[in-house]
Length: 288
Ligand code: PRT
Ligand code: ZN
Image 1: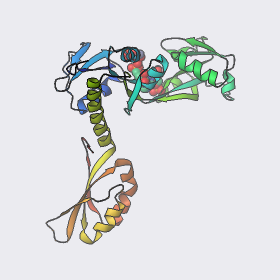
Image 2 (image 1 turned 45 degrees about the vertical axis):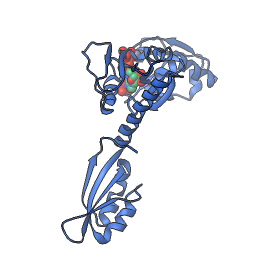
Image 3 (image 1 turned 180 degrees about the vertical axis):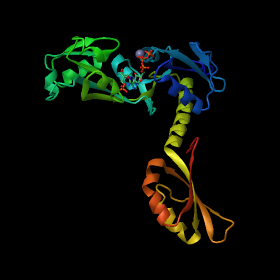
Image 4 (image 1 turned 30 degrees about the vertical axis):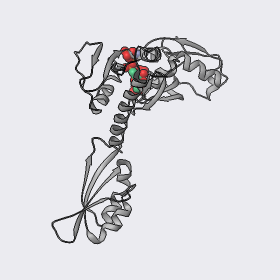
């Protein structure tokens, strides 16, 4: 209960989420010294202790208080069914849990699965999905290499995670239904003590700054002074760019922060309005 206790965060020890999880903490300015095989590490400059776990164990450890927060896929949270609060979606580890059938099947719709056998590592999510849709199918739980089940005659179809689709493809399967979309999320134990809640707020504040920065670019462009107004109107989402006079008389530099996606839509307009020497620079942190 004391505020001296660090916030304990569980992240995947090794696997698809581990590099991005570590990188996120690094970008939040949290430096962790750990030996390659450490199971637990203390941050040097933030009241944080990192627990390295298998992803499947993270929801339970967060729910029972072994860890206060964790970084894990929504698919794992949904499957585990423990009570944890989703604090932030983190934008990495994106995938979907989908139903797939052999390529040769002329798939008519979900009712195809009626009476069929479906192999998966996600029996809870799959059973819930099928019963919501009123489909009675046999759910066969296997823990790995689900994609080979139809080929060896173990099941008619599968429910598995898909990202590029190449695993399905190379096993002669095709994706026919998306059960859920998933990405990595920061989850927290409900009812964190006050001191820990304050540390979590601090961590989330930093995560927000990092994520905002990742979506934004700093733009610097030059323009004749009589074009400043027209260009300012084009720059999306900015009430008022910074205008700095150039040494060359009658010219200014405009500085602005814009969403990278929007930038490509307006670049031609900016040029047509007289913008020159457009620089687009990454932003490291953005604090509001
Ligand atoms: O050892 P530990 O239990 O911690 O790890 P793990 O082996 O159970 O999980 P890991 O590291 O494979 O995945 C961790 C998390 O990454 C998952 O829970 C998802 O939230 C997320 N994620 C994102 C994925 C994928 N994309 C993904 N493509 N997890 C698994 N896959 C697998 C999928 O199961 C299939 O075998 O990749 C294959 C499909 O990929 P494509 O690109 O061929 O479609
Ligand atoms: Zn796992």
